[in-house]
Amino acid sequence: MYKVHVSIPAAATNVGPGFDVLGLALNLRTVIEMSLRPDDKLNVILQGEGADQLPDNYHHPVVRAAIRLFQRTEQAPAGLNVRCTSYIPLDVGLGSRAALTVGGLVAANNLLGSPFNHDDLIHMGTDLTGQPEAVVAVMRGGLGICSSGPDGLIYRSVEVAPVRVVIALPTLPGYSRRLRADLPQAIPLSDAVFNIGRTALLIEALRSGDYKLLGHAIQDRLHEPYRRDSIPGYNDAIAAAEEAGAHAVALCGAGPALLAFASYNHQSIEGAIKSAFQAAGVEARTWSISSDMQGVVISVVE
Image 1 (cartoon, rainbow, N blue to C red):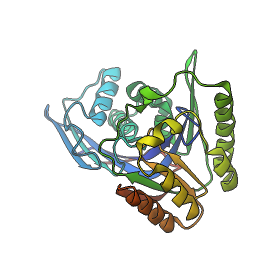
Image 2: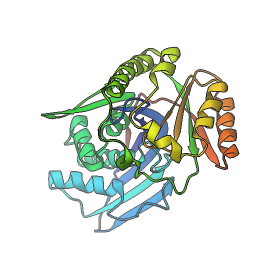
Image 3: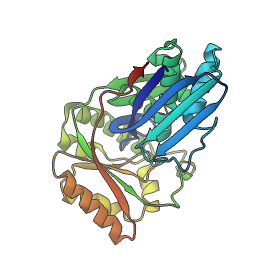
Image 4: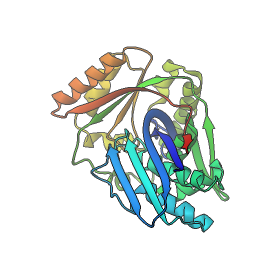
């Protein structure tokens, strides 16, 4: 049986000042296996992160994405096998739904002989998720930079220096993504200028591997100040990470995951962050992982 195997990285979005603009691919992956069936059945098997939260039917992000692509080609198969194994925590700021959506698009596209190129798939993924910065990062790897214009999405993928980061995820069952609605819709000009400058410097810091510059450039005035109070132990966790050797710490997307950049001492940074959250009455999971420059990886099995 012809089977497509797709591996997709996570993406930390915003990355400090790059609100709705930047996405950094990380080597924490979701794996999608997809194959056609001779009957008209849909068989969806879910494993790993989010398996107990997502539907095993037509409403799963992978299946929705595949259906969208099949509709575009008017070549819908009779039946489909889908196996999804995710190592990316769901809805914590690491682009899990973007990875699932891109995985579904890429797998379905390959089953049909690849009628669409990567740019086509990025636009489809953006339409489905509303997160172009995450879609670009997981599709191409590196640092995705996005903006919109009169002719639609404008984006580039920038190669960054190899970097290892610590991801810390506090266990906060009540944490809500409603916080986007709570962000101010008008901001002082000084805050806009501050973030523009920091975003430009952040891109250069990641491209060149300049950790000292990164420490200055990671600062944000548009979203983190309004979200940190919803994460118990947030300030103490950042202080503990920096004391243990982290050069810069930022919120991943809308959180509650944190992203700590460090050139050394990663295990100690993990321990320091966990201890800080525990002192605030919050348990936390941590990972020490590398940035990702591959993006989507595809293999086909006959």
